[in-house]
Image 1 (cartoon, rainbow over the protein chains, first blue to last red):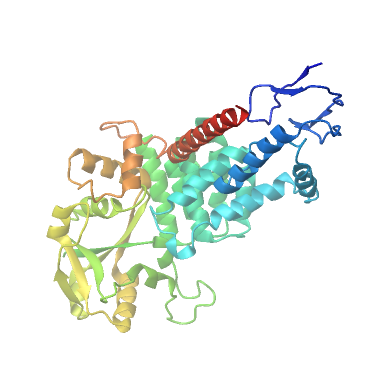
Image 2 (cartoon, rainbow over the protein chains, first blue to last red; image 1 turned 45 degrees about the horizontal axis):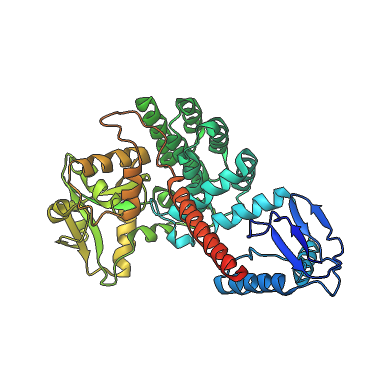
Length: 242
Length: 214
């Protein structure tokens, strides 16, 4: 008697067609499929010895070799034949989970430190801009709140913060203009002159006339005459261009 | 009287007596020395500007064209006479620059600089120089105009800057400043490349799988 068993392709399987296992005389135990979170994973099955492993073994082997060779995450995860994948997953689960707040702060710090201080020059901070734009896309307004707290508490390199604030003004995302405007206006009262200047430059990049009055107010209360002139100039520029 | 223009960062020149608090007497903080960092030959690049400052924007454009993206441009205008009085050696010499004409006409080097010269130069800039700024969006307009007028040698313009300026829709002579260069362009390009690479890798894997199955 020849029996054919069809195993549907799983979501994690690179083989998008179903697998057909054929055996002349067979008693195949049930393969359990368990869902964990969003992903569908097959658990190691307690398959009878008569079951033919060769095909799934080959598939796993090829997957592992290619993954190692290409340095990528394996696309083939046939856990029926290779229980080590499950061990890897379980060991990952033991890693302590960080809060979203910690993730945002750490990623922000990484971006702000992505360029050495001596390389932070006007017009030469493209890597910082790319990193910050991607970070903003990931964390949005929650991220902006974290950036504000980092900037106010001077927890990072001030020059790097100044450049980051300019990039905040440059991000091409009309939906977040209000949030970015609020952040930059708020930082006109930052304790550091460098951060204040960065916020003013960010407001000029943002180009919103709503920033004119806050810039003028900040200029009135500024004691550093050079920075005061720069704040006035930023307000003047926005007036002329609006 | 004519001036010499030097690109600076205005925030490095904010010090005064007791600010920062650790600064004692007439000491000079180290920060501004970063703006007068000479070449390996102890020369410092400066640009000659006439009394009416008519070429300032042209010089700013020439320097900014070597940068990665448009940003604010801070500069100091130092009186040429004051520099010569202090005994600085000034030599007109063209340098490799995206605006060769401007370089030929106005670029100079301060030569044979010693550490003492640098200290006197920083002191002179702090006491007498005019510090000014061109805003980022204005720099971008200047660069766009210079490219349109073919004043810049595109092979010498920073490639990233060229990409940024070309990725923006042309606004013509519009005065208003919209949102500045989109930083999304580069990441989206990178994403596209990664997606293509991933797609080709997946198709290769599928082909291998089909072959093995046979």
